[in-house]
Amino acid sequence: MKVCVFGAGNMGARIAEVFMTSGHAVTMIDIKPEFCERGVKTITSDLAFLVKKEKMTEERKNELLAGLKTSVDRKDAADADFVIEAILERMDLKKELLQELDTICPPHTIFASNTSALSITEMAACIPNRADKVIGCHFFNPAQIMKLVEVIRAIQTSDETFKTVFELMAALGKTPVSVNEGPGFVVNRILIPMMNEAMGIVADGIASPADVDIAMQLGAGMKSGPLHTADLVGHDVNLAIMETLYRETGDPKYRPHPLMRKMVRAGWLGVKTGKGFFEYDGPFGKEIVK
Image (cartoon, rainbow, N blue to C red; front, side):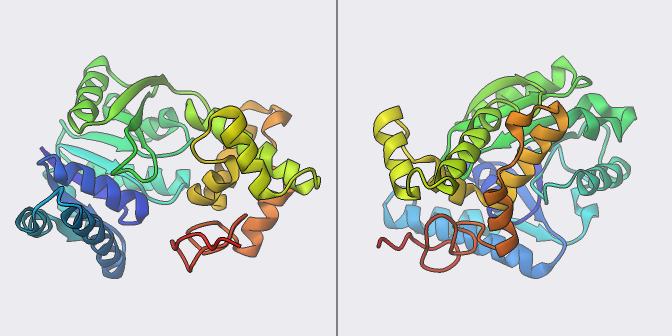
């Protein structure tokens, strides 16, 4: 299958990696060459780690990297069977991309979005002549490791499109779950408000970030505490999801905590910036244990 991934950031690159290692021909497209180069660097580092752990040969790594195509031209998606976007979490940008791809891609192409919470139905409506080919495929970070993929039906998504994509995710070695579109889907509708509440506990001086995480790990069986997880996801993403939940439902239980907004304004986004509720050894670095 010819796969085109839009967005060469952390999620886009890892999604491209998943398809590559499963034998698909992949083109990764972003708006600047340096963004594509950064994505290739991410994939190269992941594959080098597998070689080091003797889970992949050096020859296989080089073969995969040689087969990866990158581009800054959307027209290079013209022969894609499956397109998935992992661009910025903005509806206007996603719609604009879909509308252009509608003029580029052949009729059989399936369009998937890796959005964390935005409406797949609204995206599909912007290309009404093939709205049945639009679907959500929400991978989780880090996409090359995490097994879950939420496969989200828009109201327009056809049974054929859903079946094809659900089976494709399973063939990638993932565990797909079927989701009828709703704000936040399944995981984020539960997880992000929990993170929001954890931030409220810290803001109220009830417990430190470390103690909140320890309490939830040992008391609720979480592998990673809510605030470490929030740092990993990125507080800009957490805020965008909370705002979507609040806007879509009107329910005050989904109102973002002021501390979340404050951290985003400060640029303390978590692992991606080196500082969130915990500090890291530079952007995307290891936690600094104090």
